[in-house]
Length: 249
Image 1: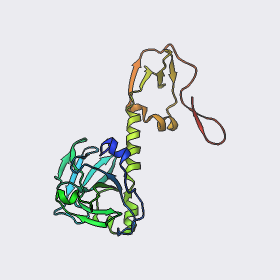
Image 2: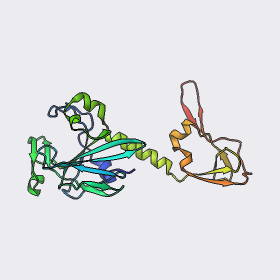
Image 3: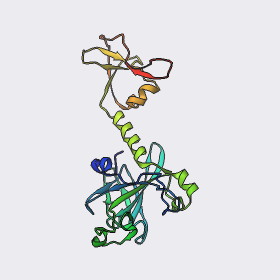
Image 4: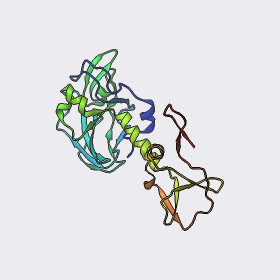
């Protein structure tokens, strides 16, 4: 899993946020996240993981050039809807990191000076004062369905915040793939990490440890015949008081 936009754009160029009230939309709220993506035709949208891009015939007055990227993640199906692309997208299967297309300024744009405008396919229109070049991206639960963006009750059930969701996924994977090396004695279920002092510290692998470091089973585990330099101190999470807080020890 990876971000579908360059990290700098992701962090620094956010526009209208998910769930922002929007009277000009049928469902009454902004169902996705906008990212400002200048220069025109140069910012790539990449496949977050393996999946299939679906496109729809013709140029849309509101969406411009657009498509829906459907993928499986954590045993669930998601659909990433990308709007206002620079050129027509090519349907097909893609691998993680493949470029799906480049961000543009086609379709519906909203600016303070001009209000709502509809921008055509030409570079001249996409770079005009009426244009607001950006990527509008939505994250749908399950397979994409057209009525999601037409009926508010369905939109509330199917649309989820793409920024919060992807950051949760990315942070989770970075914890799983953080190169922590675990040690285990043959014939024992205890798991250790090695400290800079050369001692091996047993860890608690319950739900609170996993919330910090991910599933340790997916990290590298080195099995040794015997661990002699064991510490009596556990590495884990322990309750610090009746307020429910935990301290890392």
